[in-house]
Amino acid sequence: MSLAKYREKRDFKSTSEPAGAVKARNAGKRELTFVVQKHRATQLHYDFRLEFGGVLLSWAVPKGPCLDPSVKRLAMQVEDHPIDYASFEGVIPEGQYGGGTVMVWDRGIWIAESEDVEVALKKGDLKFTLEGEKLHGSWVLVRTRGFGSKAGKSWLLIKHRDRFASTSEITVQEPRSVVSNRLLSEIASEGGGDVAKASTGDPPARTRRKSKLKSTTGKRGGPR
Ligand code: MN
Image (cartoon, rainbow, N blue to C red; front, side, top):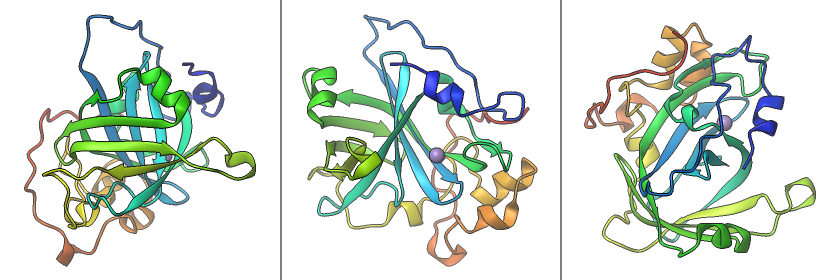
């Protein structure tokens, strides 16, 4: 686990994303954080991150998670991110790596179902339970055959059949931040970002619920 690639890609004088540190693994700590960040960069995607080994293991999921067990969502593994990144919500300046608007779409803890996480990651079959505000229950990340430079980086994110499985479109119905209750366009507007671009990541008003989910922390990451 290393943040070398993460740091290489970014200029911390220009972006307010955290430079981060690899945190010492706390052997007694059993609750590990997960976060899903909705990111309107060149393409809209959802960054799915699991805390492990002092970093956030990260996958970019173009269509976002789906509660329907018959749906497999492509998840491209990307560079490990610092633990602090889990609270980042705001605007990455255009021209910088990942330039665009970032929202903390879901957050909570994850519990490995696979006995040994390192072995499961190597094998390319990691089973886990999520206890988030939007995502719950049992899931799996399975490595799949990739092509060319993507070989070994392509995974599928799939919901297991349990009482949290559903055919409802959670990304459409629950488009707001779990930390600030904002839409992408509102985060962009308050952070001096590209509002028109960000709003293309928000679903049309008629399809989304009002604010069913309450903010847990009331804190906002991002530019201060
Ligand atoms: Mn991203």
